[in-house]
Length: 129
Image (cartoon, rainbow, N blue to C red; front, side, top):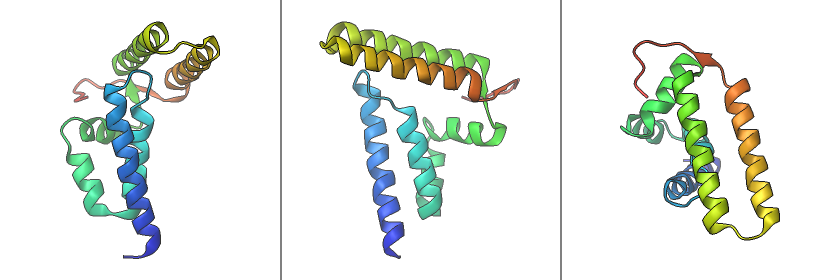
């Protein structure tokens, strides 16, 4: 195994750890780190990528996104709603400086716009995620 693959695997694993931490820590995003993990694993280790995709919680959503090249309207609304719920909780209970609350809110707005207008909306009757 060459050095670049080792770096990609280590980066993917670190990204996965941060993504998992984002499930627990309010305000820390999960989705970008999970997607980054998939990208790093696909470039470095087919075995790790296949294990990652086989995960019953995360893998199913990534596989569906890759297969269908987009998200359903319901999935988008659920993701945006969850994101804003966590942003609200973070800003009310965990973040004190007003400037940081503003930054978190602006990043949330950008994320909402990207998910709403850039990520393709698909229509699937038998969606899994």
